[in-house]
Image (cartoon, rainbow, N blue to C red; front, side, top):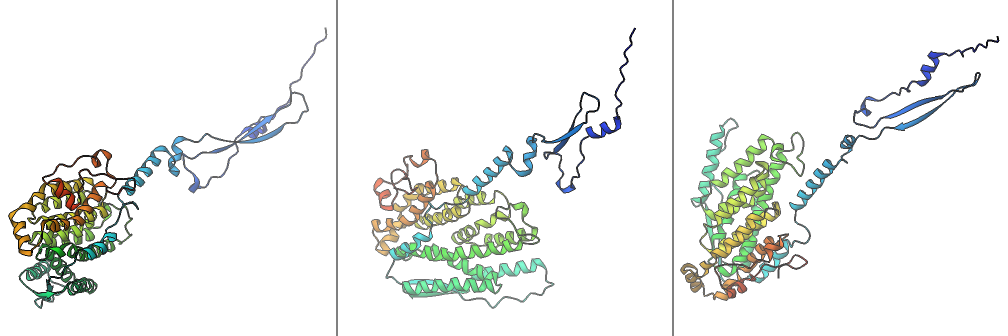
Length: 427
């Protein structure tokens, strides 16, 4: 009997185990994140089936399939992209595009069109010598009382009326007031600057030379725009500590000092007794509501729109609506409700043209109705442009229903329908 014995091959288990282990790589702490894709190096062994065969190892690198959540780190996941697109869309809605004709392009045409040879009058602020030097240790309530007394001093007659001014002299005086405003602000005389703005705003209640009113509106609102920019820039600079605000900031990013200063300005404006200057000055500071609350601009627009209904003169009211739409388009053009309300309030109040007050005024100044109606055209054209800008087609092709005849609508430039062409201009 022949017995065959098969001898087993001697194996070195420890060395084989070492060859089959994954290679350990050093990972920097700053580069590590559990959601990032990890590259694994796998070592495979090929073993020969015959004795004496040598075993060789080959290394292959394979990448683990990326985790869908890992794309959140670089902002490429769908939710992050949607948030970015939504933010860009919102920023685009809050800015007017190049297809919107700015007010600055209309300013020169209005000044050259609405002129007069009548003599004009203007009230100039003469300053006050009653101001008391307050010590650094004086209480806050005392400072507030002093400032309110200074504002009362303005309304009690610390001003001088200049009569018999030509149109050129009138324009020069307004430019002097604008320069005085900047100088007062630069010398840290904030109350004096506010007095100048209040005084200029009061001039918009005067329609004694009615044919010049559109040009007066242009000149006075230039001063209001300057004042609004100065106040906004000052509050913005107060928010730079410790870090400057981003362009798309919210009220939560504003520090308490800046909010208190902003509220102080609105409290000063609330102390103005007359409706027209109080409305205009607050409208000039509309953008400052961003420092206080998220919905401050929208709420203020609605409130000021309702306040204009208290103005008795229809010409003064339509230009107040035009200015409110002007600052509204500059700050929040996507808020269409206030624009639409201003336009339909205009139509509802147009019957006042035939009222006794307006008719007596036209007789006194010897102005015919067709000439008087043309004074409305710059304001109404501007309001129509604001309403029609990026408005839904269903609205812009809706027939108007007002309390005035088609002939009157034609005189002031209101079409029977609000229509737009491809360039977004009214026709």
